[in-house]
Amino acid sequence: MPEAHTVTSYDDELRFLVRRLSEMGGIAERMVADAVAALVNADAALAQRVISEDLLLDNGEREIYDKAVLIIAKRQPMASDLREIIGSIRIASDLERVGDLGKNIAKRVIAVHTMAQPRKLVRGLEHLAELALTQLKEVLDAFATRSPDLANSIRERDEEIDAIYTSLFRELLTYMMEDPRNITACTHLLFCAKNIERIGDHATNIAETVYYVATGEQLAADRPKDDETASMIAPAPGSA
Image 1 (spheres, rainbow, N blue to C red):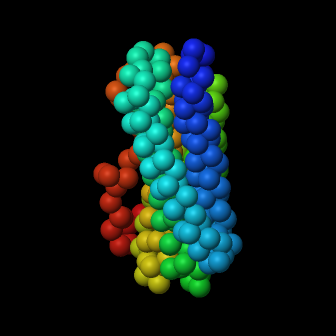
Image 2 (image 1 turned 120 degrees about the vertical axis):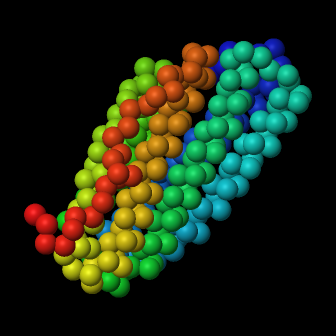
C-alpha cells in the first residue's frame, strides 16, 4: 500500500481503488470457475448466471476509472501514488476482460450443452482452467502484497498454460478429422480453450502491472510463450 498521507480523504480514495479491485478479482474468479463447471456438467442454468454477472465487472471497471481520473485531477499524485492509480486502471481493464472471457465460455455452454462431447477433452479444458485460475488467484495475492517476486514468478509460468492449450488444440483437431460429427462440439470447445488461454494472458498482464507498481520498473518485453497453434495444420486424411 502507498504510504499514509496527511490528508485522510486521500488515503480513503486510494483504499477505495484497492478494495474495488479486490471485489472485481473475486467476481472474475467466480465467473470463470462457474463457466468451466457449467461446461463440464452441461449446466445451462449456471452458464446463464455467469452471463448475467458480467455487468458487475463492467460497472466495476467504470467505477475504478472514474475514481482514478478524479484522484489524479484533485491530488496530482507523483511517484508510487501515480503508479498505484495507473496500475489500478490497467488491472481493472484486465479483470473486466477476464469476465468477458468467462461469459464467452458460458455462451458456448448454452450452445453445446445438449451435444455429446469428448469427456477426455472436457476434462483437459478443466485442467487448463485450474491452471489459469491459479494464476489469477496468485496474481491478485501479488497485488494485495505488492510482491514483485511473486508477480515475476507468475509471468514466467505462463508458458505452461500455452503448452497445454497447444496440446488440447491438437487433440481437438484430431477428433474433428476422425469423425465429422464431432466438428460442431469440438469447434465450440476450441473457442473455450482459447478463452481460457487468454485468461492466463490477462493474469500475466496483471503480474507485469504489479511488478511496475511495486518497483517502478517494467519487466522485459519478451514474455515466455509456448503457444504453437498458429503454425499447426490438420493432418491429411489417412496420414499416420
